[in-house]
Length: 338
Ligand code: AQP
Image (cartoon, rainbow, N blue to C red; front, side):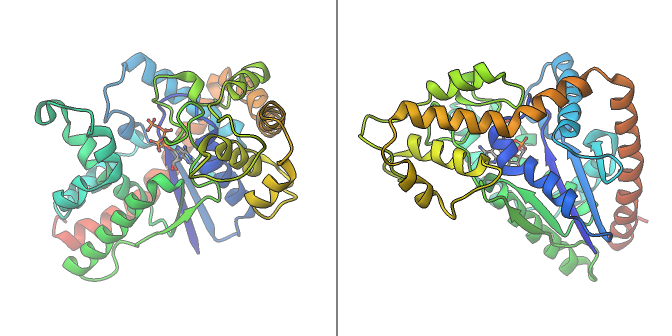
Protein backbone atom coordinates (compact mmCIF):
# COMPACT_ATOMS: atom_id res chain seq x y z
CA UNK A 1 0.00 0.00 0.00
CA UNK A 2 1.08 3.55 -0.79
CA UNK A 3 0.22 6.79 0.93
CA UNK A 4 0.68 10.00 -1.02
CA UNK A 5 0.82 13.23 0.99
CA UNK A 6 1.37 16.76 -0.22
CA UNK A 7 0.47 20.29 0.81
CA UNK A 8 0.12 23.80 -0.50
CA UNK A 9 0.09 27.03 1.46
CA UNK A 10 -3.15 29.00 1.23
CA UNK A 11 -1.23 32.22 0.59
CA UNK A 12 -2.97 33.32 -2.59
CA UNK A 13 -4.26 31.86 -5.81
CA UNK A 14 -1.85 29.14 -6.97
CA UNK A 15 0.30 30.02 -9.98
CA UNK A 16 1.49 28.09 -12.98
CA UNK A 17 4.61 27.00 -11.05
CA UNK A 18 2.47 25.48 -8.28
CA UNK A 19 0.35 23.78 -10.92
CA UNK A 20 3.05 22.33 -13.16
CA UNK A 21 5.42 21.68 -10.25
CA UNK A 22 2.93 20.06 -7.89
CA UNK A 23 -0.85 20.32 -8.25
CA UNK A 24 -1.15 18.70 -11.66
CA UNK A 25 0.78 15.72 -10.35
CA UNK A 26 -1.65 15.45 -7.42
CA UNK A 27 -4.50 14.99 -9.87
CA UNK A 28 -2.57 12.50 -12.01
CA UNK A 29 -1.73 10.47 -8.92
CA UNK A 30 -5.40 10.49 -7.98
CA UNK A 31 -6.46 9.23 -11.40
CA UNK A 32 -3.76 6.55 -11.48
CA UNK A 33 -4.17 5.45 -7.85
CA UNK A 34 -4.57 1.76 -7.18
CA UNK A 35 -7.17 0.55 -4.67
CA UNK A 36 -4.63 0.33 -1.85
CA UNK A 37 -3.30 3.87 -2.38
CA UNK A 38 -4.35 6.59 0.07
CA UNK A 39 -4.17 10.20 -1.11
CA UNK A 40 -3.90 12.99 1.45
CA UNK A 41 -3.73 16.64 0.36
CA UNK A 42 -3.54 19.50 2.82
CA UNK A 43 -3.96 23.27 2.76
CA UNK A 44 -1.10 24.03 5.10
CA UNK A 45 -2.36 27.14 6.84
CA UNK A 46 0.03 26.77 9.80
CA UNK A 47 2.87 27.16 7.31
CA UNK A 48 1.21 30.25 5.88
CA UNK A 49 1.54 32.11 9.20
CA UNK A 50 5.33 31.77 9.30
CA UNK A 51 5.11 35.21 7.71
CA UNK A 52 2.64 37.80 9.00
CA UNK A 53 -0.80 37.42 7.42
CA UNK A 54 -3.87 39.58 7.60
CA UNK A 55 -6.44 37.32 9.36
CA UNK A 56 -9.36 38.21 7.05
CA UNK A 57 -7.20 37.73 4.01
CA UNK A 58 -5.95 34.37 5.27
CA UNK A 59 -9.53 33.16 5.81
CA UNK A 60 -10.42 34.18 2.28
CA UNK A 61 -7.29 32.50 0.86
CA UNK A 62 -8.12 29.27 2.69
CA UNK A 63 -11.51 29.20 1.06
CA UNK A 64 -10.13 30.09 -2.36
CA UNK A 65 -7.41 27.46 -2.12
CA UNK A 66 -9.92 24.77 -1.22
CA UNK A 67 -12.06 25.78 -4.21
CA UNK A 68 -8.92 25.60 -6.35
CA UNK A 69 -8.07 22.06 -5.24
CA UNK A 70 -11.54 20.99 -6.36
CA UNK A 71 -11.23 23.01 -9.57
CA UNK A 72 -8.03 21.27 -10.65
CA UNK A 73 -9.86 17.95 -10.33
CA UNK A 74 -9.29 16.60 -6.83
CA UNK A 75 -12.25 14.52 -5.72
CA UNK A 76 -13.04 14.50 -1.96
CA UNK A 77 -14.33 10.94 -2.29
CA UNK A 78 -10.97 9.76 -3.62
CA UNK A 79 -8.58 12.10 -1.79
CA UNK A 80 -8.54 13.39 1.77
CA UNK A 81 -8.54 17.18 1.41
CA UNK A 82 -8.24 19.19 4.64
CA UNK A 83 -7.03 22.32 6.37
CA UNK A 84 -3.87 21.52 8.35
CA UNK A 85 -4.91 23.54 11.42
CA UNK A 86 -8.06 21.42 11.78
CA UNK A 87 -5.80 18.56 12.88
CA UNK A 88 -3.84 19.46 16.07
CA UNK A 89 -1.67 16.33 15.68
CA UNK A 90 0.43 18.14 13.04
CA UNK A 91 1.60 20.71 15.59
CA UNK A 92 1.85 18.12 18.34
CA UNK A 93 4.14 15.85 16.32
CA UNK A 94 6.11 18.89 15.26
CA UNK A 95 6.92 19.63 18.90
CA UNK A 96 8.07 16.07 19.53
CA UNK A 97 10.23 16.15 16.39
CA UNK A 98 11.58 19.60 17.32
CA UNK A 99 13.16 17.99 20.34
CA UNK A 100 15.16 15.81 17.91
CA UNK A 101 15.88 18.38 15.17
CA UNK A 102 19.27 20.02 14.80
CA UNK A 103 19.23 23.83 14.61
CA UNK A 104 22.44 23.75 12.55
CA UNK A 105 20.76 21.65 9.87
CA UNK A 106 17.72 23.95 9.82
CA UNK A 107 19.93 27.02 9.47
CA UNK A 108 21.51 25.57 6.32
CA UNK A 109 18.19 25.17 4.48
CA UNK A 110 18.15 27.09 1.20
CA UNK A 111 14.69 28.59 1.77
CA UNK A 112 15.69 29.90 5.19
CA UNK A 113 18.86 31.40 3.75
CA UNK A 114 16.95 32.95 0.83
CA UNK A 115 14.20 34.41 2.97
CA UNK A 116 16.61 35.78 5.57
CA UNK A 117 19.29 37.09 3.21
CA UNK A 118 17.75 40.57 3.16
CA UNK A 119 17.03 40.90 6.86
CA UNK A 120 19.72 43.09 8.36
CA UNK A 121 18.59 43.12 11.96
CA UNK A 122 18.26 39.37 11.88
CA UNK A 123 17.90 38.27 15.47
CA UNK A 124 14.93 40.56 16.22
CA UNK A 125 12.98 40.27 12.98
CA UNK A 126 13.51 36.62 12.17
CA UNK A 127 10.91 34.39 13.69
CA UNK A 128 11.41 30.96 15.15
CA UNK A 129 8.52 29.57 13.04
CA UNK A 130 10.31 30.41 9.81
CA UNK A 131 13.39 28.51 10.96
CA UNK A 132 11.46 25.51 12.26
CA UNK A 133 9.04 25.35 9.32
CA UNK A 134 10.72 22.22 7.86
CA UNK A 135 10.04 20.40 11.15
CA UNK A 136 6.33 21.13 10.74
CA UNK A 137 6.57 19.99 7.15
CA UNK A 138 8.19 16.75 8.31
CA UNK A 139 5.39 16.29 10.85
CA UNK A 140 2.75 16.83 8.11
CA UNK A 141 4.19 14.02 6.06
CA UNK A 142 5.12 11.65 8.88
CA UNK A 143 1.87 11.98 10.82
CA UNK A 144 0.00 10.49 7.85
CA UNK A 145 2.66 7.80 7.27
CA UNK A 146 3.26 9.06 3.73
CA UNK A 147 5.34 6.80 1.53
CA UNK A 148 5.50 9.25 -1.40
CA UNK A 149 5.48 13.05 -1.44
CA UNK A 150 5.01 14.87 -4.76
CA UNK A 151 6.59 18.35 -4.67
CA UNK A 152 8.45 20.88 -6.78
CA UNK A 153 12.23 20.85 -6.70
CA UNK A 154 12.38 23.67 -4.11
CA UNK A 155 10.99 21.29 -1.49
CA UNK A 156 13.41 18.40 -2.08
CA UNK A 157 15.77 19.53 0.67
CA UNK A 158 12.95 19.69 3.21
CA UNK A 159 11.93 16.14 2.35
CA UNK A 160 15.49 14.94 2.85
CA UNK A 161 15.31 16.53 6.29
CA UNK A 162 12.01 14.73 6.99
CA UNK A 163 13.64 11.40 6.12
CA UNK A 164 16.54 12.12 8.46
CA UNK A 165 14.17 13.05 11.26
CA UNK A 166 12.16 9.85 10.76
CA UNK A 167 15.28 7.68 10.70
CA UNK A 168 16.73 9.51 13.71
CA UNK A 169 13.49 9.08 15.65
CA UNK A 170 13.30 5.36 14.84
CA UNK A 171 16.95 4.94 15.81
CA UNK A 172 16.51 6.77 19.12
CA UNK A 173 13.23 5.22 20.20
CA UNK A 174 13.49 1.86 18.47
CA UNK A 175 11.21 0.21 15.95
CA UNK A 176 9.76 1.57 12.75
CA UNK A 177 7.37 4.09 14.22
CA UNK A 178 7.89 6.72 11.50
CA UNK A 179 8.13 6.01 7.78
CA UNK A 180 10.84 7.87 5.83
CA UNK A 181 9.01 9.06 2.69
CA UNK A 182 10.18 9.10 -0.91
CA UNK A 183 10.22 12.41 -2.80
CA UNK A 184 8.43 12.52 -6.15
CA UNK A 185 9.77 15.50 -8.07
CA UNK A 186 7.49 16.67 -10.85
CA UNK A 187 9.02 16.75 -14.35
CA UNK A 188 8.38 20.53 -14.29
CA UNK A 189 10.87 20.93 -11.49
CA UNK A 190 11.09 24.68 -11.33
CA UNK A 191 9.00 27.20 -13.22
CA UNK A 192 10.78 30.53 -13.16
CA UNK A 193 9.51 34.07 -12.69
CA UNK A 194 8.44 35.84 -15.91
CA UNK A 195 10.22 38.97 -14.70
CA UNK A 196 13.37 37.47 -13.21
CA UNK A 197 14.04 34.09 -14.83
CA UNK A 198 16.81 33.35 -12.33
CA UNK A 199 14.25 33.21 -9.49
CA UNK A 200 11.38 30.75 -9.13
CA UNK A 201 7.84 31.84 -9.89
CA UNK A 202 6.33 32.58 -6.49
CA UNK A 203 3.04 33.66 -4.91
CA UNK A 204 4.67 36.18 -2.62
CA UNK A 205 6.76 38.13 -5.15
CA UNK A 206 5.61 41.78 -5.12
CA UNK A 207 5.30 41.97 -8.92
CA UNK A 208 2.05 40.24 -10.01
CA UNK A 209 3.32 40.15 -13.60
CA UNK A 210 6.04 37.72 -12.54
CA UNK A 211 3.50 34.89 -12.30
CA UNK A 212 0.51 33.46 -14.12
CA UNK A 213 -2.34 32.68 -11.75
CA UNK A 214 -4.64 29.76 -12.40
CA UNK A 215 -7.50 32.31 -12.31
CA UNK A 216 -5.98 34.71 -14.86
CA UNK A 217 -8.17 35.48 -17.87
CA UNK A 218 -6.92 34.63 -21.34
CA UNK A 219 -6.21 38.32 -21.93
CA UNK A 220 -4.13 38.56 -18.73
CA UNK A 221 -2.19 35.42 -19.59
CA UNK A 222 -1.34 36.88 -23.02
CA UNK A 223 -0.35 40.23 -21.54
CA UNK A 224 1.93 38.69 -18.91
CA UNK A 225 3.62 36.33 -21.35
CA UNK A 226 4.11 39.13 -23.88
CA UNK A 227 5.84 41.17 -21.19
CA UNK A 228 8.02 38.27 -20.00
CA UNK A 229 11.73 39.09 -19.81
CA UNK A 230 13.66 37.39 -22.65
CA UNK A 231 16.71 38.57 -24.62
CA UNK A 232 17.55 40.15 -27.96
CA UNK A 233 19.38 37.24 -29.57
CA UNK A 234 18.12 36.01 -32.95
CA UNK A 235 16.12 32.80 -33.17
CA UNK A 236 14.94 30.46 -30.48
CA UNK A 237 17.29 28.07 -28.66
CA UNK A 238 17.04 26.16 -25.39
CA UNK A 239 19.88 27.21 -23.11
CA UNK A 240 18.76 27.61 -19.46
CA UNK A 241 22.10 29.12 -18.39
CA UNK A 242 22.73 31.48 -21.29
CA UNK A 243 19.10 32.31 -22.16
CA UNK A 244 17.09 31.79 -18.95
CA UNK A 245 14.03 33.82 -20.00
CA UNK A 246 13.53 32.11 -23.38
CA UNK A 247 14.31 28.72 -21.87
CA UNK A 248 11.71 29.25 -19.14
CA UNK A 249 9.10 29.94 -21.85
CA UNK A 250 10.15 26.76 -23.66
CA UNK A 251 9.90 24.84 -20.38
CA UNK A 252 6.41 26.23 -19.79
CA UNK A 253 5.39 25.30 -23.33
CA UNK A 254 6.89 21.84 -23.03
CA UNK A 255 5.24 21.04 -19.72
CA UNK A 256 1.87 22.69 -20.43
CA UNK A 257 1.28 20.75 -23.61
CA UNK A 258 -1.21 18.02 -22.81
CA UNK A 259 -0.06 15.84 -25.72
CA UNK A 260 3.66 16.49 -25.99
CA UNK A 261 5.01 15.52 -29.36
CA UNK A 262 8.60 16.04 -28.21
CA UNK A 263 10.77 14.02 -25.93
CA UNK A 264 12.80 16.95 -24.62
CA UNK A 265 12.93 20.73 -24.52
CA UNK A 266 15.92 20.64 -26.91
CA UNK A 267 13.87 18.75 -29.46
CA UNK A 268 10.97 21.18 -29.10
CA UNK A 269 13.33 24.16 -29.38
CA UNK A 270 14.68 22.86 -32.70
CA UNK A 271 11.18 23.08 -34.14
CA UNK A 272 10.80 26.60 -32.78
CA UNK A 273 14.21 27.78 -34.00
CA UNK A 274 12.93 30.13 -36.70
CA UNK A 275 10.14 31.76 -34.73
CA UNK A 276 10.35 35.37 -33.66
CA UNK A 277 10.11 36.07 -29.93
CA UNK A 278 6.61 37.37 -30.50
CA UNK A 279 5.55 34.17 -32.23
CA UNK A 280 7.08 32.06 -29.48
CA UNK A 281 5.20 34.06 -26.84
CA UNK A 282 1.92 33.68 -28.77
CA UNK A 283 2.44 29.96 -28.92
CA UNK A 284 3.22 29.74 -25.18
CA UNK A 285 0.15 31.84 -24.35
CA UNK A 286 -2.10 29.62 -26.54
CA UNK A 287 -0.84 26.45 -24.89
CA UNK A 288 -1.07 27.77 -21.33
CA UNK A 289 -4.60 29.06 -21.98
CA UNK A 290 -5.67 25.67 -23.36
CA UNK A 291 -4.15 23.82 -20.43
CA UNK A 292 -5.71 25.90 -17.63
CA UNK A 293 -8.96 27.35 -18.96
CA UNK A 294 -11.04 24.46 -17.61
CA UNK A 295 -9.64 25.20 -14.13
CA UNK A 296 -10.69 28.85 -14.29
CA UNK A 297 -14.26 27.93 -15.20
CA UNK A 298 -14.54 25.22 -12.59
CA UNK A 299 -13.00 27.43 -9.87
CA UNK A 300 -15.65 30.12 -10.39
CA UNK A 301 -18.30 27.47 -9.82
CA UNK A 302 -16.79 25.95 -6.64
CA UNK A 303 -15.89 29.28 -5.03
CA UNK A 304 -19.54 30.24 -4.66
CA UNK A 305 -20.72 26.96 -3.23
CA UNK A 306 -20.01 27.63 0.46
CA UNK A 307 -22.00 24.66 1.70
CA UNK A 308 -20.06 22.28 -0.49
CA UNK A 309 -16.72 23.80 0.55
CA UNK A 310 -17.65 23.46 4.23
CA UNK A 311 -18.73 19.87 3.81
CA UNK A 312 -15.55 18.95 1.88
CA UNK A 313 -13.43 20.49 4.67
CA UNK A 314 -15.39 18.66 7.37
CA UNK A 315 -15.21 15.32 5.53
CA UNK A 316 -11.46 15.81 4.99
CA UNK A 317 -10.83 16.77 8.63
CA UNK A 318 -12.61 13.68 9.87
CA UNK A 319 -10.53 11.34 7.69
CA UNK A 320 -7.26 13.19 8.42
CA UNK A 321 -7.89 13.09 12.18
CA UNK A 322 -8.30 9.31 12.08
CA UNK A 323 -5.15 8.89 10.02
CA UNK A 324 -3.07 11.11 12.35
CA UNK A 325 -4.37 9.45 15.52
CA UNK A 326 -2.80 6.13 14.54
CA UNK A 327 0.68 7.67 14.27
CA UNK A 328 0.33 9.79 17.41
CA UNK A 329 -0.58 6.76 19.47
CA UNK A 330 2.58 4.94 18.35
CA UNK A 331 4.78 8.05 18.70
CA UNK A 332 3.58 8.89 22.21
CA UNK A 333 4.01 5.36 23.32
CA UNK A 334 7.56 5.19 21.85
CA UNK A 335 8.61 8.43 23.56
CA UNK A 336 7.04 7.48 26.89
CA UNK A 337 4.31 10.09 26.85
CA UNK A 338 1.59 7.52 27.15
N1 AQP B 1 8.12 27.99 -9.30
C1 AQP B 1 7.79 26.74 -9.00
N2 AQP B 1 8.04 25.73 -9.87
C2 AQP B 1 7.69 24.45 -9.57
N3 AQP B 1 7.07 24.10 -8.43
C3 AQP B 1 6.78 25.07 -7.53
N4 AQP B 1 6.18 25.06 -6.32
C4 AQP B 1 6.15 26.32 -5.83
N5 AQP B 1 6.73 27.16 -6.69
C5 AQP B 1 7.13 26.43 -7.76
C6 AQP B 1 5.62 23.88 -5.69
O1 AQP B 1 4.27 24.16 -5.34
C7 AQP B 1 3.92 23.43 -4.18
C8 AQP B 1 3.19 24.30 -3.20
O2 AQP B 1 4.01 25.38 -2.84
P1 AQP B 1 3.75 26.19 -1.50
O3 AQP B 1 2.39 26.71 -1.46
O4 AQP B 1 4.16 25.37 -0.35
O5 AQP B 1 4.65 27.43 -1.61
P2 AQP B 1 6.14 27.66 -1.99
O6 AQP B 1 6.87 26.44 -2.37
O7 AQP B 1 6.75 28.47 -0.93
O8 AQP B 1 5.96 28.47 -3.30
P3 AQP B 1 5.20 29.77 -3.65
O9 AQP B 1 3.90 29.40 -4.27
O10 AQP B 1 6.06 30.53 -4.52
O11 AQP B 1 4.91 30.55 -2.35
P4 AQP B 1 5.81 31.65 -1.58
O12 AQP B 1 6.00 32.79 -2.52
O13 AQP B 1 4.93 32.02 -0.43
O14 AQP B 1 7.10 31.05 -1.18
C9 AQP B 1 5.21 22.86 -3.61
O15 AQP B 1 5.25 21.47 -3.90
C10 AQP B 1 6.29 23.57 -4.38
O16 AQP B 1 7.41 22.73 -4.58
